[in-house]
Length: 78
Image (tube, rainbow, N blue to C red; front, top):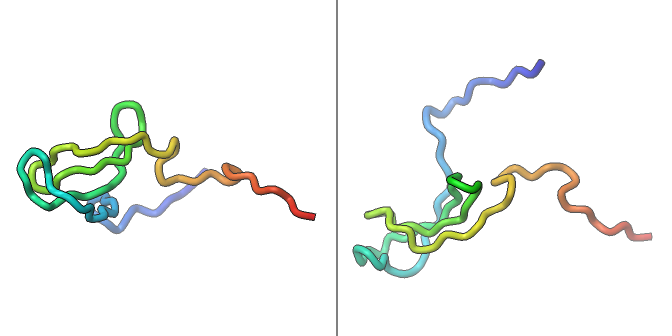
């Protein structure tokens, strides 16, 4: 049986990286790139911070930020 401590943070958050350009909807220069979990799995999105318009949406990693051991197999060198 596993026992995990309760998180100290009250809310979950994700790192948002500023992106260049202006929002096509409201014109604000407040674009950010970050991962989201939605229908169909993980997505890497670019959204406007002011009006939340989606500027870009690309399929993200299958497991999100989780990296299972053995996912990347390296070539043995001898």
